Length: 598
Image (cartoon, rainbow, N blue to C red; front, side, top):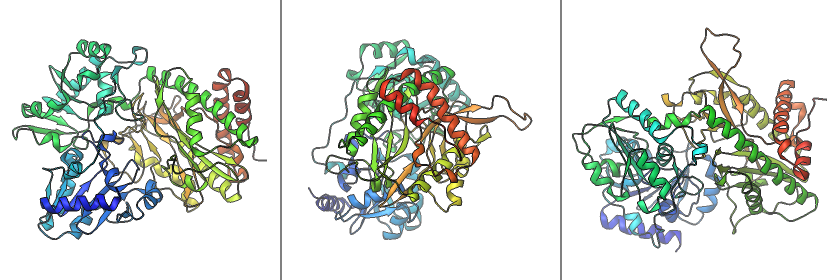
């Protein structure tokens, strides 16, 4: 079916049911970032395959709102669809756009299970002056979806006790204490990463994220997990029973919500109105971040020990991969972007504790690398040959942690312009890596430190500089985010033990893209020079993989930047050398050689 036909069907249904516009976000009832195929509604109607975007359809117009990571990709995928690319940050956002486009007293529809309480309020506020009604009582889009995939039904299992620092009972006790402090009788949780962390269970309902479809309702005396019970193995059932968590069918949430009384703690950003519409009017909402989101963002010392070991194992796999990759280049063995994913999986899957990749590998050669979230497919990919830059962004899930890193490597000859861009990005990366900052500073505020070397050259990048990372959980987890583009909130305070990415970039559409990414953990300054100004934190690099020095224009580097890079490479060599052998060992030694200004 052509995209134009799908839009036509949607418009006919809108007209029949009295809707003047329809909104299709990238969302599921748990408001996840990465979605099971069952909820790829926006992809079905737009043809755009990126992970984030909002489709809006009116009687005679359609637009897809996406951020800068997806502008190039969306422009190609929307061609001929009748959908206009709307570049977030450069155009009016879709609530205001709808308020401008539609006449007074129009009706806008959206599925209630794809809309958070916060998003509902934002839409209602934008619509208020023109008396536009937001109607979430129907879901006409999904009734039109032919061959919609079923709900996922993957097995749910306990996170192995050797990798767990805190029992489920201990986590529930901490959450109940937080509820008590906020005056909450109950706490309803929809976000899948929070539920997996609290229960110490893992699953595979969402690709690359070890989570499972469920809801969790906690009171001072009880806890109920709403889940398809057939997915739980015997060990998972035993863990829940010992933790005092009872089971209810996934579909029973509405009937349980109807019975809630008193005060209820929810995160309005992470709770769909499809759940809240069943609440009694007598229930008083306490709106705040889920306590578990804050708790799990701070990794314990034991967690960090396991993560460091995971980084060593992942680093070995990367040495083996790059050794084969460069051998193939030298010997003119054909490779394409799809091969990169296959090769990385081969080596990572051999490491102890490996579970899966943590996201779909991004391997972009030359112009494809200018698309920050580019994804090669069997129908569209590039051969890695000739001259240029190859960007590889990849990661894996291990029982002891989650990895995510980006490296750029040369293929054939590279130009002075490419070296300059690469060096600017490296300077930005080092600027953040060396930063010392006050404990509890809002993470958004340190973004400018990273961007300074790029801004001085009048360059920039459209995505954030850093995202939080889970512990054998989602590769993107908050609350902290290093991005001046993100709205500030009090939950983004930088705490000791938080793991965040450091990933500045520079992208030239149609030419090349560069990004250098490590994961770092917030650590207290061990020997403070001052104590009267409070505690200060610094970043410890967790990722162990050489940064390619062949692309550096050394004349642009300061002595201090060179010292940092040589120090990082010394750490990588010392950590990985005992675990590598053969070609991987040789590659590691070569790529961690010191560089000098001369």
